[in-house]
Length: 421
Image (cartoon, rainbow, N blue to C red; front, top):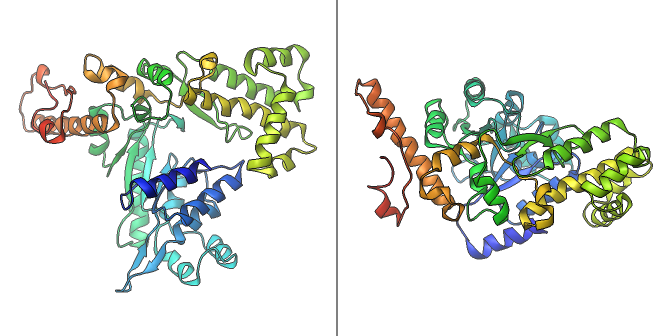
């Protein structure tokens, strides 16, 4: 419902302007992913960023293929653009190559794509762009960008030599990019574009609560920790979150340990169950289960069907209640749950905060996404130029080699003056 409200708002407020919508892989809730794609197609969403995928699903393939056609000149046009955010070469390769023939055939048989779209599928890559996600907030394998990006670029070149696409797949970089120097380094390694995430959450336009933004603005490079992911809890998948000022990582990890050690809620030791009800859930676990039942009856009844006769599955849904609510509390700023806030965050946030110290961007009330993007990109250009001068033998004094953000009045006013000192 929230996704559809947002798409209707876009149609009313920014008709004709470009935007992208996130499609997150939901292995435990297939219906969520399927219906999201149906919404995208129904509302004419032309650009989707697919994230957290470990393999291809029929839904992400359907989105891509449903936009294939030939123009008046007979050229293949992909109206539905796909950006795949990946952190593993094997996943990247799946998105660089055409859609699997078996999936294409299945979609055609189900009437979800046309015969023409099926015939065009093997001529185009599944994704237009591959975002190489290094050590980032949220779902991450915590791979270092200098190791991961060159490997994906070589893989792209290999696939391009094999398929000879008219337009090669672009490769961008994400994860750990919180300063102009880091952005410049990503471009120097061959990234076609960069993506920021953690630093955007502390900006005014973010959906995080003021309390959560203030916590992010105080984060250091080492103030992140891995914790179980709500959407992939049973699979043991972790994601990176803020640990400074919140007990969520520790509490979420304890829930997963209990899930591994016991066969259901009824098997929990009495003392452990009492501790959960008093400290983490703050209510009887049976009440939490009833909330889960009411929630999934409306959203995805299949989850309840899978839990019937499976105490282990029932326990997973109850524990996922806490993980899901912890994100909601951080968004709404529920004061009595501040120590349970789940805030996705990577080390880029700490790096950005260190760089912004002493500037107007230190205060979260001054952080706007356009300002932050402007300074990161302009600063990257500044440091790239310094590198070129150094290679030419020019000595750059240390005092002139640091880009510092200054407030922007208007883009035209800022262009000649913003930046270095």
